[in-house]
Amino acid sequence: MGDIEAPVRIFSSFQSDLDLQLFDEDNNELGRLTFQGLTNNGTNDVSICIDTKTYLVEGLLSDGTKSGNLYNKYLINDRFFNIPVGNSIL
Image (cartoon, rainbow, N blue to C red; front, side, top):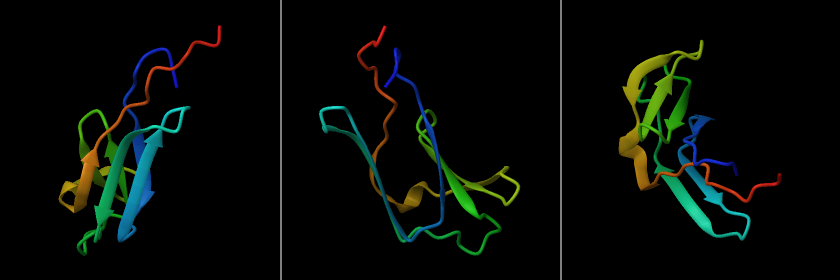
Protein backbone atom coordinates (compact mmCIF):
# COMPACT_ATOMS: atom_id res chain seq x y z
CA MET A 1 0.00 0.00 0.00
CA GLY A 2 1.26 3.45 -0.82
CA ASP A 3 0.39 7.12 -1.00
CA ILE A 4 -0.59 6.89 -4.67
CA GLU A 5 -1.96 4.03 -6.74
CA ALA A 6 0.85 2.46 -8.72
CA PRO A 7 1.12 -0.14 -11.48
CA VAL A 8 3.17 -3.24 -10.80
CA ARG A 9 5.22 -5.73 -12.80
CA ILE A 10 5.02 -9.37 -11.75
CA PHE A 11 7.59 -11.87 -12.97
CA SER A 12 6.87 -15.59 -13.10
CA SER A 13 8.18 -18.77 -14.62
CA PHE A 14 5.90 -20.67 -16.97
CA GLN A 15 3.30 -22.60 -15.00
CA SER A 16 0.43 -24.29 -16.81
CA ASP A 17 -2.12 -22.94 -14.35
CA LEU A 18 -1.29 -19.73 -12.48
CA ASP A 19 -3.59 -17.73 -10.20
CA LEU A 20 -2.50 -14.34 -8.84
CA GLN A 21 -4.64 -12.35 -6.43
CA LEU A 22 -4.27 -8.99 -4.68
CA PHE A 23 -6.05 -8.31 -1.37
CA ASP A 24 -6.29 -5.17 0.74
CA GLU A 25 -5.65 -5.04 4.48
CA ASP A 26 -9.30 -6.01 5.12
CA ASN A 27 -8.88 -9.14 2.95
CA ASN A 28 -11.05 -7.78 0.12
CA GLU A 29 -9.95 -9.00 -3.29
CA LEU A 30 -8.76 -6.06 -5.41
CA GLY A 31 -7.71 -7.94 -8.51
CA ARG A 32 -7.07 -11.35 -9.96
CA LEU A 33 -5.19 -12.78 -12.91
CA THR A 34 -5.80 -16.43 -13.75
CA PHE A 35 -3.94 -18.29 -16.49
CA GLN A 36 -4.85 -21.67 -17.93
CA GLY A 37 -2.61 -23.79 -20.15
CA LEU A 38 0.21 -21.23 -20.07
CA THR A 39 3.09 -22.42 -22.22
CA ASN A 40 5.93 -20.78 -24.14
CA ASN A 41 4.79 -22.50 -27.37
CA GLY A 42 8.30 -23.69 -28.20
CA THR A 43 9.80 -20.19 -28.15
CA ASN A 44 13.02 -19.29 -26.33
CA ASP A 45 11.04 -17.51 -23.59
CA VAL A 46 11.90 -18.73 -20.08
CA SER A 47 9.52 -16.54 -18.05
CA ILE A 48 6.81 -13.90 -18.29
CA CYS A 49 6.37 -10.32 -17.13
CA ILE A 50 2.84 -9.21 -16.27
CA ASP A 51 2.65 -5.41 -16.59
CA THR A 52 -0.46 -3.92 -14.97
CA LYS A 53 0.21 -0.53 -16.58
CA THR A 54 0.11 -1.79 -20.18
CA TYR A 55 -2.13 -4.83 -19.49
CA LEU A 56 0.37 -7.03 -21.33
CA VAL A 57 1.82 -10.43 -20.48
CA GLU A 58 5.19 -10.45 -22.22
CA GLY A 59 7.72 -13.23 -22.73
CA LEU A 60 11.22 -12.84 -21.35
CA LEU A 61 14.43 -14.43 -22.59
CA SER A 62 17.04 -15.97 -20.28
CA ASP A 63 18.89 -12.62 -20.04
CA GLY A 64 15.70 -10.85 -18.90
CA THR A 65 15.03 -8.94 -22.12
CA LYS A 66 11.57 -8.88 -23.68
CA SER A 67 11.18 -11.28 -26.58
CA GLY A 68 8.20 -9.59 -28.21
CA ASN A 69 5.95 -12.60 -27.60
CA LEU A 70 2.62 -11.96 -25.85
CA TYR A 71 0.78 -14.43 -23.63
CA ASN A 72 -2.49 -12.61 -22.86
CA LYS A 73 -4.45 -15.30 -24.69
CA TYR A 74 -3.90 -17.65 -21.73
CA LEU A 75 -5.73 -15.33 -19.32
CA ILE A 76 -9.14 -16.68 -18.35
CA ASN A 77 -9.71 -14.04 -15.66
CA ASP A 78 -8.07 -10.68 -16.31
CA ARG A 79 -8.96 -8.26 -13.54
CA PHE A 80 -5.66 -6.35 -13.75
CA PHE A 81 -4.76 -4.43 -10.62
CA ASN A 82 -2.50 -1.69 -9.30
CA ILE A 83 -0.97 -1.37 -5.87
CA PRO A 84 -3.73 0.57 -4.09
CA VAL A 85 -3.59 3.71 -2.01
CA GLY A 86 -3.24 2.90 1.68
CA ASN A 87 -3.59 4.71 4.98
CA SER A 88 -0.66 6.97 5.73
CA ILE A 89 1.60 5.87 8.55
CA LEU A 90 3.11 9.36 9.02
